[in-house]
Length: 431
Image 1: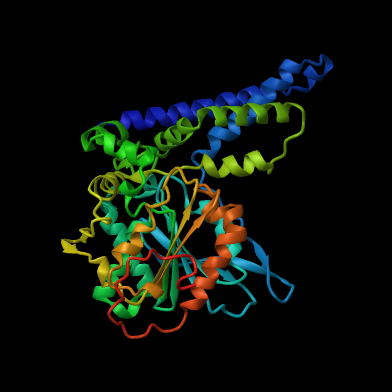
Image 2: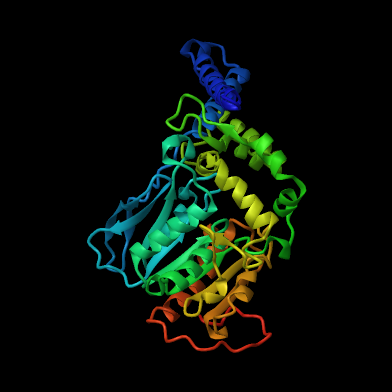
């Protein structure tokens, strides 16, 4: 029962604010009030509308909303989401474009398990669909997973990726976005030693904390500053009685959202204040820029406690990936065993979450990989979100990634001893 009451209290506060918003909206919208025009009533109804929507979205899993795409034949083709591997903590899904021949590029997008749903990569998926067969890791909300399903830590996450890659086969190109980059690198190294025939053709790591100490940020400073005991005491709660995962220890999504918003509280306050005024003036719409962004941003999921704590301890504090000491089920994973999978890193010059230098560290760890199989790219002026879903991704990074995939789509040649050089990989290598 410890911390279960706290979890239910947060849910109660969320539910209460949603109810207050709905009440204010309904009360201020009575037709009789139109006889006495009052700007305060319009503002009250607008506040209620924005508040109700805001707090309601926090517990709703967003839909992918990808219904069709226009293909090379000029026709719109229906897109169907298919589950190809179903597991308790996450599924492997495929976006099947009906009526189109299968594309030779098979891409696995590894989505973060860091508070938001995999739908955060919606625009990334849409941008790749015309040219690729797109598969995505769709992680589940921990509050909905019964305790009987057991734990889920970073070793389990790594083994899930191994299972997904084995299912997809060796002609797969992997793109890992942000948080899963270190574990995707580890999963590739695991396959290199245990099942070489199941290795992907290429691995693109985008804005991931391979070596958090390479370029400190507020995120890495927080991880270094707090102890594991403090994290467990202040961040971990047990799922309340409302959900199937009752009793499971989690890092609650609502608590994560509070942390996200506090990092840019002034900007978020301004955004919601402006939206209330737009609604009161009748200038807002259901799918305007504010609602499109915050419907996704506010939709948060609970993270298994053991996954969160093991990530902080082993990836950020002990730097097991950076030091090449990471192990799964007691067996050390040697990243140097990767000898045939082309590896590319992508970083944003203004990334304040995973700063430049953290991700490119992966190339130094791949000691068994020839230089011609390594590549890197730093996008000028791009922040964290922009390198996988923003303007920088669409205009600059996506074409580079597709070129990299095409350059490494053939069956790998037998491994040879890598050339030892001190030259840093550049964006044109292996691309």
